[in-house]
Image (tube, rainbow, N blue to C red; front, side):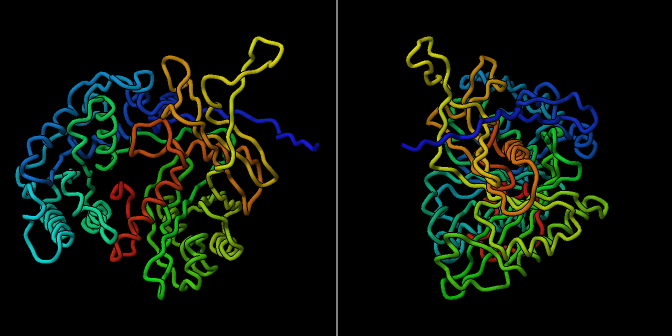
Length: 479
């Protein structure tokens, strides 16, 4: 009987996060402990142009006081009651971020009726809710210098109005926020009764700080990554009906090697879709469209970096690169010395079990109580590597082993390189690091790199909001 053996695995180091642009000792593997010990990355600059983050609110009149109490609670200290091995003490907003959290002026609090059916205007309930959101943001736009972030509460009882096959209130609100350049934070009823107050405070406070244009952390330099490296994430969404469908590709702006650069390009492809079924299964761009979207992204990078080109550019997407796309990428990026096109997919047929010595001769090994370590990497072929971004991360715990989520056997990501050269371990380590750059939660990592996560979220918004202008936006407007 024939047998096969996998190549030896490698354990990648947990990437460090940086909490200062000048003091390179202010690093931590843990995002929350890093904030607690060092303060946010932008602490030296953020307070220079704002002494307080001012919160406006929008929602039913009956929950006005609850929204205010929620914001006030973020100023207080909270001890963790869940995941205490991971979640540290929350010290209060000002102690953590070195800036105050305040209520915006009285006129910046918009009160809707308690019943969604009582919203004014014509049309069905979805149209009236959309008009109510637009009226609220238009009013707040008139006092934009009096507020920084808008808290919007959609009660659970409003769900028939907030979500349908044709309408998503969350995505519509984000598109309106982009139109008026107003960042928003959406709340549901659960936030008022959630018992783990420390976890809630960490999550919500970080989101508000980022949406007010703060930077909580960046990636510390990663060993082996060449200077001048940058990353792009691509995600595609179909637009239009089956008779006249087009791609819209949502491209996260070129991420710098420290994970910064959170703008994106909303680009509508010019070439029509010929096979909608194939497009849904494996979407791709024509050579001309790929050239256009990457050239636009490169312009954004150069505008932020004094006209300098990246020396190495890594492009991530979740589907295979067609030859047309690769050709278009090399057309647009002819001035970039190294280009890597990486497919980032879930390797659903793979699992890994961590074995430890059993103390017996037969069997000599037994499964450990925790899964394979985060960062376990296995080379599959000359252009393919498996990396477990979910797994045991003892560095993040005060008690030893720590598995985020605590359930199931983790699946690895499968990275397939369609163009480029160099170490597969390096592209795996970069993907591992980029899972720590999602500022919209309090977790150690996201299941996919931020280059994929952000572009997916933005593509979904574009697909659900047909009239979002094709422009360049900061990502914080869509968090």
